[in-house]
Image (cartoon, rainbow, N blue to C red; front, side):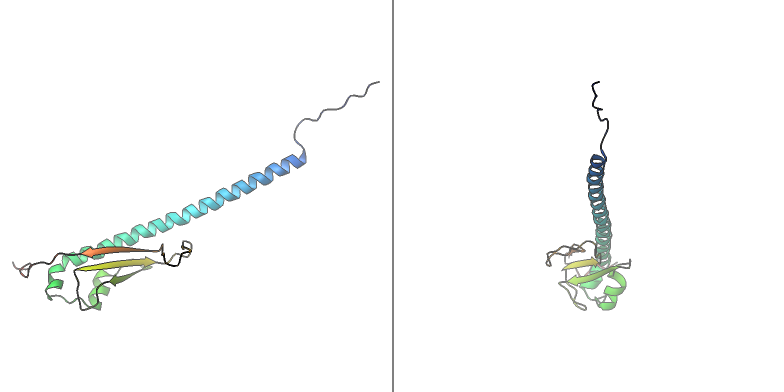
Length: 146
């Protein structure tokens, strides 16, 4: 009697394990990409909030530009802290190109925040800050006249 060889149908256990390993590595890579994407989305949100804070500071200076230019209002640290500083905690502001008690029509507003998850390996680049240049025209001394 002739013995027939039984044909195998389906996958072997080794093939299944290899397929599961490749799938798990691919899924872990996708999860890591998704996590990085969420981190950058959060940093983008913080960037937007900082941009709003900086523009808010520029608008507040515009409201007092005449008084600041002609000395009717002091451009001192109290004015900077009480009027221009960011309203939301976690953000800090620095004015570049001007000093307290010396209003300048052209200066830079720097808003920074801390996010340890998004750091550029290049030490010269800080991804956690924005700079807005503020430039005001010289107003006439009669700008506050009724």
